[in-house]
Image 1: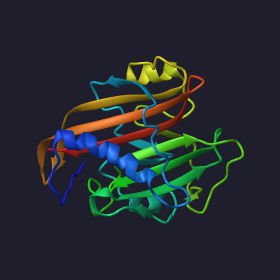
Image 2: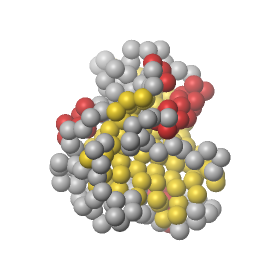
Image 3: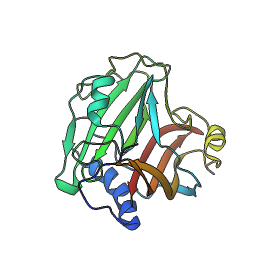
Length: 227
């Protein structure tokens, strides 16, 4: 992985704040299909993990890695799509949105780049995925992929429609409720190749899941590196 930044690295407290700002800024977008807003005050519980819950996501044969893959890379591979944007400077957010209707269940997926942490290259810092109704269709802002996609999953195999038991097998902890949001968090360090040498970076990662009838109906995942 190559990490490149034009801004100063934030403190650990600021990194945690940036994760919240990422979702709130996305929620304020005015386009027709902005990323959905986080459900404030409705998180049922938080599980602290010993490893990052999600370092990336695979869409068919294409792998997206947090803070390494650019939004342009996604558009070039999955489908040419207008990059949407809202906000200014450090409060800005950029995203691409896709609708998958050819799979067993219909899904919508947002790839998000925080205006500050994603840098000028718009590196992916977050992903939001939701299950759609059986009658849902693609939209102008959330097009269908132009590449074949038979499977979507995070690096740990987690995806929409899975059960609480599958959450436990993949993340080591099972939510204590059948409905609502549950958060998995990790803060630690990781070696990163940068400029031909290995540097130890702090990493803050969070994965939120929404359960409906004991199955995953929505996922929010984000990851930020700093030193």
